[in-house]
Image 1 (cartoon, one colour):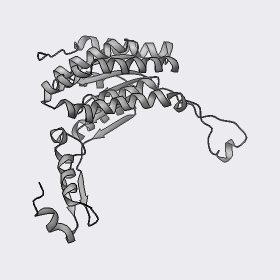
Image 2 (tube, helix red, strand yellow; image 1 turned 180 degrees about the horizontal axis):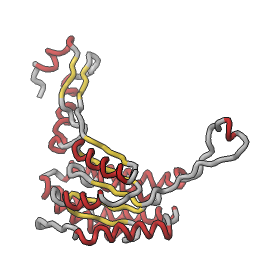
Image 3 (tube, helix red, strand yellow; image 1 turned 120 degrees about the vertical axis):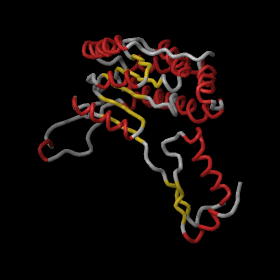
Image 4 (tube, one colour; image 1 turned 90 degrees about the horizontal axis):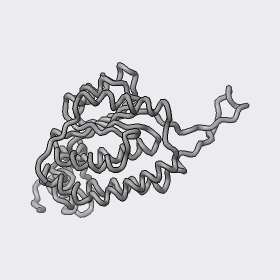
Length: 278
């Protein structure tokens, strides 16, 4: 597979967003049974693209195939199977457990309704899991989606994933945008019904500010610091040390919850820090 960079033309992004918006307003969500059929087709297509997806991440990141399968591909398959098993139950109307005093004489139901058109901004570190897991939830909930992929950081993967998605979903459900900063800036100027962003706190501020202009609700998963606590009841200290190293260096350390520092109780400090276990 040769290196590719297939950026979405800026001139087409707004028109694709507009088409999805009009489609949702005109026809709403597709029936639940059709969503389940689409989900099963997606699972089949994902298995057909498994080797190509793993190879693309090997080229982009030099990440082993095994690591991609364990840390990304398997998570997506689990998510699909969970939705196939539970979607109809999750979408059933619910009866409130209780009513406030002003509503005790009425009967009410809580119904699950889609937001509309969602924007999902995908980071580079787990591009398979963090694109498809939220995408599955969004589409199964009845929404239309604009999926922004980090083509500047992992071009081969984004090219492969775009092929997979275009073979599974039509343009009345999903629009895939490949690009970097310019494409994201253009998207943030449009009015979405919900925005999902995973990335740095710095960019999270920009996303939240843009969303606030339209009163758009957001889900922001942002970076932070991740301590690891080691207490006297740690069990086998060699196992603990190996787990700490795995938590720090899995995916080359590019994980939002990778261990940043240890917090060790005084009574075991010397055992944990000084002894060579590896």
